[in-house]
Image (cartoon, rainbow, N blue to C red; front, top):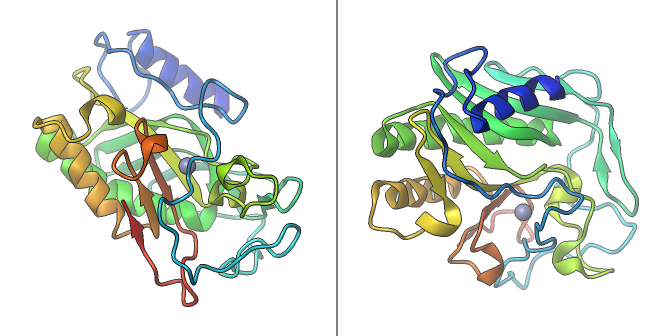
Length: 256
Ligand SMILES: [Zn+2]
């Protein structure tokens, strides 16, 4: 599965004919800076700490149950989301509280003829995959059609799961990435070869800039944490999305 997706991505970036589905046309693509794989590649870890955290945000002790909003992880063998290409993984069992049981690797989301593929498999929980897919369909596809003339596109994502704590502090709160409830996006590529870079096109008075503004706004109706280039200097190159709990009732939204 992974190699298949990687093959598709390679086909895209190397301008070879794309195999399977109305994915992306064979056009020269601008250079895009991919996010890290969790093992380096220049991706700055621990950058998903909100600039201003609500004072009522629950504290998480090292080794404790990682998040009060974490539901019981009973779904271990099946995750079926219509229109979502995924592979059910064995539970992710990291150290120091990292990990989750309902793990899946998501590679693409479809809606009719429209298809959003990822630059690499995204390892997240099944529940987060549902939220992510909803946003891609309800927020990204329409915005892409409006501003980029294509509902289908490639999304440059990070790996999703990363076992780390916020701000790289040894005893800091676990990043939502460590719980499979976060993803980072650095850009998009549409079939005509247009590339949208979060770093380069954010706030630009262009269709690409307006596309990014639109998808950031729609993300704030699907996720509880949305951190883009306006959030802080750590996010100039990507948009962080997660469904972490903020506030005692988990009803605090961070949209920056
Ligand atoms: Zn992130």
